[in-house]
Image (cartoon, rainbow, N blue to C red; front, side, top):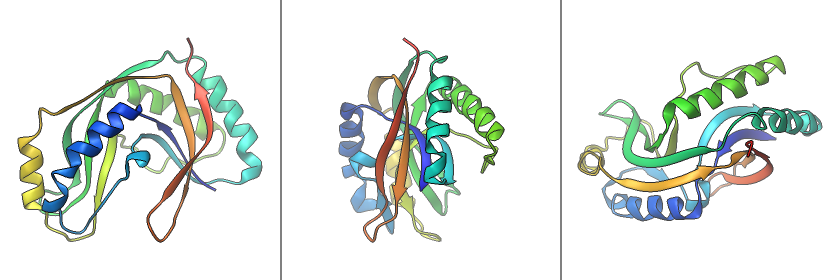
Length: 185
């Protein structure tokens, strides 16, 4: 099972993000846009995990999240990963970055104790809106995103994290919730 741990925005935030992206789709070349149900903040990507290990993982997630207060989140602004000439990912920003990063660190400390290897030392909280194919120039898209920097997609209270499975299909990845671990309170 290919798994990741996510903070899921509420339905209103997803609708706002999807509506905002609609105006950019015609400007984008060779981009695969995330569907509304795919929008999330990845807090930890685990990769391939044996189904036999799920009970240990979900129990550990429940224990960890029980000591974390709910997070008042806000999605706003646009950005990209990669270079300006060839962006690889178009994203929406998520705040409070420091609190979400602390949650990420806490999860990874526990996951490393369980034998998982952190795939990257860098973590930037975001919601992936689109993935651009390699070596695709998207100057008009980035210029339009620059003009929309003040965009606020709304606030929500993250009450926990979700362990998600990602299944590749010919039409893109499909996500399935495996377990929800609630934050304290």
